[in-house]
Length: 84
Ligand SMILES: [Zn+2]
Image 1 (cartoon, protein in one colour):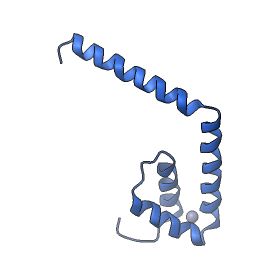
Image 2: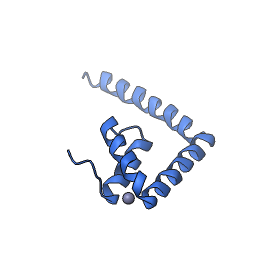
Image 3: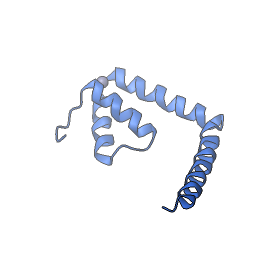
């Protein structure tokens, strides 16, 4: 993973991870270098950002966070019941 130049496949993978804030700084730097010369991935990145913003606007992300925390509480209660 030490190479600087990503393939388009790797770049799109980093782009998807970046959307979920799972990419490392180094991955994002490499992605930034890639989209400097690759218009296909640059467009993909822009589309991805639009999609993310659209989701945030529709508050799906907010609802998802709530249901996630509810799920966590539920699991914790079940674990207590079973004595873990
Ligand atoms: Zn590319």
